[in-house]
Amino acid sequence: MRFNLKLSQQGLILVGVPIGFMLVFLISLLVLLMRVEQEAKETDRSKTIIAKANSLVKQYYDAASLLMIYKYTKTDKIKNQFEEQLTSTLASFTEIHSLILNDPAELELLEQLKMIADKGMSLMRRYENHLAGGEKLNLLEVSALYRKFDSTGALFTAKLQELVSHETARHRINSEEEVRSRLLVKVVILTGVLIAIATGALLTLRFTTFTTNRLALLMENTVRLSNKEPLLPILEGKDEIAELDKFFHRMAEILDEAARKEKEVERLKQEFVAMVSHELRTPLTSLQATLTLLMSGTYGQLTDTGEKRVQAAESGITRLIVLISDLLDIEKMEAGKLSMSFCEVDVGEIVERAQDSARGFAEQQGVTLKSERSSAKVFADPDRMVQVLVNLLSNAIKYSDDGGSVEVAIAESADHVEVTVSDHGAGVPAGFEQTIFEKYEQAHSPDGKRRKGTGLGLPICKAIVEQHNGEIGVKASEGGGSTFWFKLPRVSTSEIGLGKQV
Image (cartoon, rainbow, N blue to C red; front, side, top):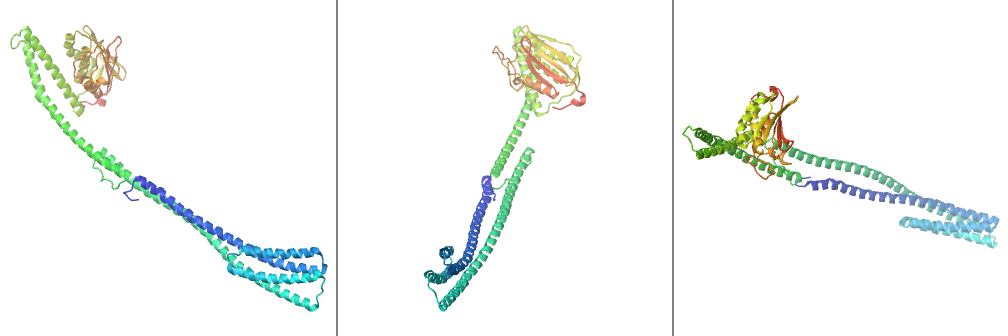
């Protein structure tokens, strides 16, 4: 099997060669069996000829014996038996003649033998006629008749013995040929079976080794691709495995090109983040500080209209800074460069800090913040957990009605601490419980209004909580609204690690 054969063609060879060989073997075996059968027929024919020839001698002399009995008894019964014996002798000649039609030498012997037998039987009939007619032969006539009969009988016996000897020699040759042919059949069967087994085994081994080795190379390329190592050379040939390997190499080239482009995109993203961090956030922070000073009257008293305009500008800049901060946080988390410092933290203090940060926004929206006091402690990054709670509180306030309230609750168990933030607004639509934690996803309110936001706050919360080995989710609140919750495990510092990089 050459490499330019497809697997289907190799499989056809694997099946076809043994089948072809078996067909040749079966035809050869059939020819040999026909030969053995023919030789067996020849052997049986020789046996029959020899038996008939031996029987012919007996019939000839039995007829002579009956004639002698008739000489003394003169009974019709003996005479009829004599006639029947002569008829039987002639019938035996006819049977032997039909058996040796294909042998000219034996036919000639048989003709000579029949002529002698006819002569002998003619003498018997002459003597039988004399006896039946009551004629008496003188001694000289009887003596002459007996001498002729004896000489004819001796000649008949000699010729018959010659025919038997000739057929016996042929019988011996046929028997030997039959034995050799039967032995040859056995040898052919054994040889054919052994060759068929050997051919099938060799072809199967060749096909299996060929296929297995090529599949092993393909698997090696798969491992190398996963390990980002150079692939082995492309397999030669036109079979399906070679085509698959060529496609695999093309796929590897495409993946390499995609990885190169991905690195280029990553480099551009990092440059963009650096640009945003240094070229945009810093000026915006300075501008926000300037607006704060204007609002405080540092640069002189503003009119009511001026205060409103400055306040609106400060609010817009604040939202822009928050958006930039969120983008930077997402980028750092995806790049694995967001650093966290874990320590023992009072959950109640985290809640208080978060409420203080969100209280101004709550007052603007006419929403009351409520919380429970708790002495529960966890190992966490306090600033990041405040960031999580501020995001959850801001969402709850944003979706609460004027005059509503947002409650923060803390629940403790043996292995974790759960913090919940509940509002009584429109709630999260069914089916969005997981979607809202994906980037740039925002749930629509049942009233059709879309609240302002970046769609990054909840994904940041989810990433921070998961980096604390915690869980976060949302469920419907009793009486309407939504309850966002997160759980932090109560673990030791050795399990979290101080100063862990995420």
